[in-house]
Image 1 (cartoon, rainbow, N blue to C red):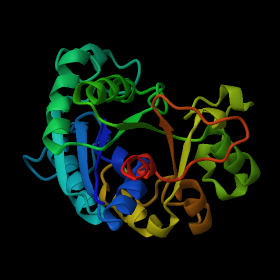
Image 2: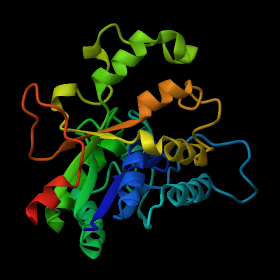
Image 3: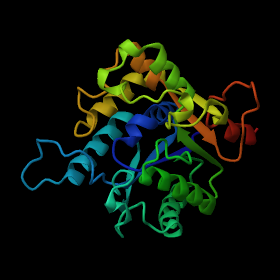
Image 4: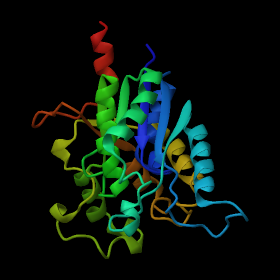
Length: 273
């Protein structure tokens, strides 16, 4: 039975990095896939090849649509907020930014799309927004609330497995680009990226779609250059780093010692049996 999955992201390229494998997998299984992006990434890195009169927002919108076509996304919507910039940027508090938006108003704006799509599965972000970016944290609050307003049956928070990443970084330092290691914290407790292993409920294996995921990332060339940390990884390290996508099911917990669940749609199928 086909279902509808909606993934909510803060900026163009976030979808490619965090959940493009899951979206491609869902599409391959016949589900409808919708992407909602809160901003157009106006405060990202400005590439040197912008054309006269072309804005960064226009470039990043075009890149998002190109990546969506690669992934197989059926519908792309932008919520219409402005990029807030990194944590501590004085523009965080500008009145038209996503980080400063009223959560109730933004959630209702998103809920309207969810109702229109009659969504079955909603992808939000974890409570840290993966790494503390104000717009990412706002996705957590807005998408989770919108899921409640629209009565979405299953809400999952996209995250990164901090333990998994720490193991990769510490066990294969020679495979990591040199500029990624000097500021690495001494302990995993100081490694403020994603969530700890025991808080995560689902691990989705997307290695079958790793080429699609990499191509979607390449489509965001203004922000993910060929020389970037992501694309300079050896193929096996890239597959191990990005071949699994991690989620926390809202309202659920994984019993100690239990394996990760691997199918976001399983509870829906069980309910109709």
